[in-house]
Image 1 (cartoon, rainbow, N blue to C red):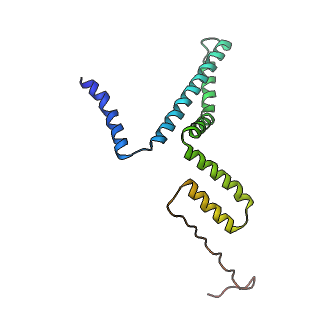
Image 2 (image 1 turned 90 degrees about the horizontal axis):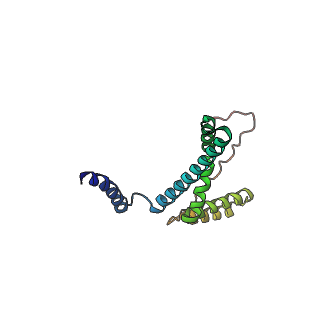
Image 3 (image 1 turned 180 degrees about the horizontal axis):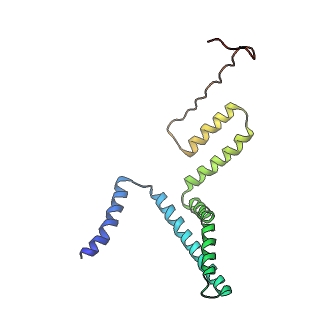
Length: 157
């Protein structure tokens, strides 16, 4: 009975605290859980396939097959994590996915645009769409005026 309580109470209390005090964004937790769960399945399956494939080629007791599979999975971890998380975010976390797409589009327009008024309008629109603040403003510092001392002359202080 006591062991059962020790196994059940902490997860239930943690879940109640998360929900009561809004400690985590539930969408974020679900997105990360799905992402890392799928990543574990993909990399675990890939590891098993590489070990089995190299084991058939090199022999069952070959430590070279295990080392090769480990190196292959380690090299594929970051690219696979990015791709799996992008797919999960696109499916379940639309706001983050849409914000990234909006910012990429603004970056592409930023390279081609030279008009400061248009850039200001675009920047405020991107901030409004991605962050959704209640109020946004942009302060621009005026460029300092060039000094009127002739070149090569010392300025008096």
